[in-house]
Length: 162
Image (cartoon, rainbow, N blue to C red; front, side, top):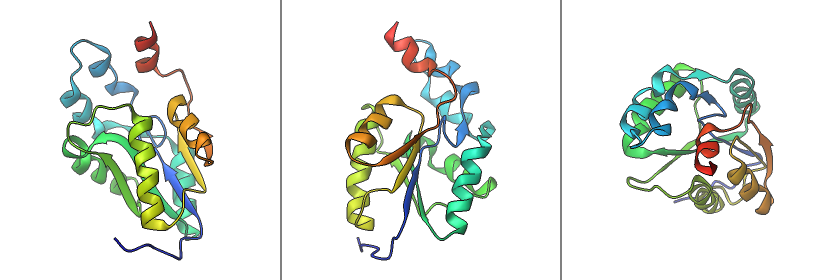
């Protein structure tokens, strides 16, 4: 992997709950057993969260490097994710998705993405956008300026705490 040394500004964007409104799909993972297949099958129906989408587009138009950092599984979600991004005019420089079978907490996977960014771009993101408190805390701990995109309490984590 070649390091991109001219990365002046690097921005990382989460998908579900940040760039995309996935609320209509949550029913499939709030039940037992969770149905990840149906959860991922609905990606194409996600509505964009317009202020974050416009921020991504503005950053790219300004020449910034923009990457996607998602907890989605690569085998279950990559084609639908790429199609959704293209349909909404988003062309990330890189898309980070979980490896098959990786069910660790998203903040763990996303911290590993940071290590790849250090290798790939020679730096951590200058800014990150995410909606999960655990991921936001991890970014802050790592010294990344982060914008909390959460618009409502996360029903998945509320259910886990109950």
